[in-house]
Length: 302
Ligand SMILES: Cc1cc2nc3c(=O)[nH]c(=O)nc-3n(C[C@H](O)[C@H](O)[C@H](O)COP(=O)(O)OP(=O)(O)OC[C@H]3O[C@@H](n4cnc5c(N)ncnc54)[C@H](O)[C@@H]3O)c2cc1C
Image 1 (cartoon, rainbow, N blue to C red):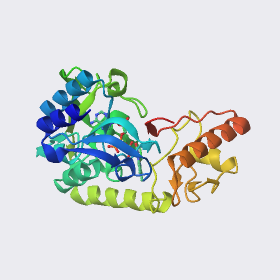
Image 2: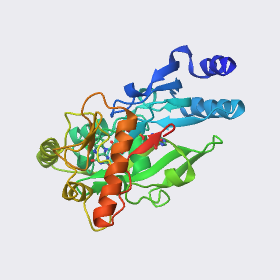
Image 3: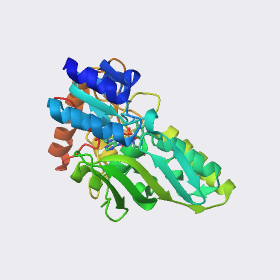
Image 4: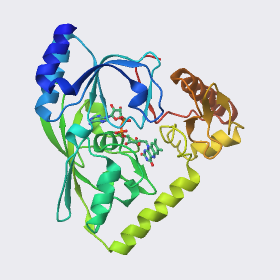
């Protein structure tokens, strides 16, 4: 293990590999125990060298973006978090073509492109993920999704091979992409947008921000919608109809403002959140015969 640490320092530079980092500081639920290592790569070469080092030392790794769709275990993570964030966050705009590295914040890309008079990413202006996480999840809101704007994605497999996938090859569907099936690491994405009317773009962004803050419990830590939308239903309505609005276990609560959000009301553990998620799933299944699938991904052992 100490060899691993020394070698990782050589690959990443001393400042970019840390030991024993609380996952609660890296996830928007604000829960989770210690990760053994957190590595912050600055380029694709470092990622491939790091993966090889992990393979050679039989150390597991997990790719993390902004941690805004993650429930991290109270027991933490025995392995390396490859934290694709500020080390890889460049955005370049050339006409209607936008290229963003995986660690760039989607909100920033949406606002930068809007400032440049480009339309297409307004839907994403309130989604607190990175480009990597958004591509992985095919993030979407208010009728738009990544699928509509992504032209291609550059990604690496676990052997260090780099591919450029077209939008078609990304196989995007509801909260799903080929990155999940093929176990890829997103390095960057290229978007094709359109020129639009500045006042219309700005208006749309401010209307969506108002809609979000009036309907969503943004004042509490969460990971957004906890459950996927089941075919023919809305998760929030099912949960509220099941009488679970405001129901809590420990510090975890089904939001009073939006039943589709499990929130950390204060001092929640990952265990509280997981127990609440399971309780909601059981009750909704028992009362309506619908099994809610989680949109939120887990990290570590549960
Ligand atoms: C208040 C709030 C509102 C939200 N609203 C929305 C919404 O409207 N629509 C929506 O779709 N989501 C929403 N979300 C959820 C979340 O923001 C999105 O799923 C986002 O795309 C996750 O990005 P991330 O960088 O935080 O990914 P993370 O949470 O860090 O990771 C999510 C998954 O992506 C993988 N991943 C991350 N980066 C990479 C990479 N570079 N390469 C490969 N895999 C990677 C991780 O391994 C993990 O499996 C919301 C969350 C919050 C907290």
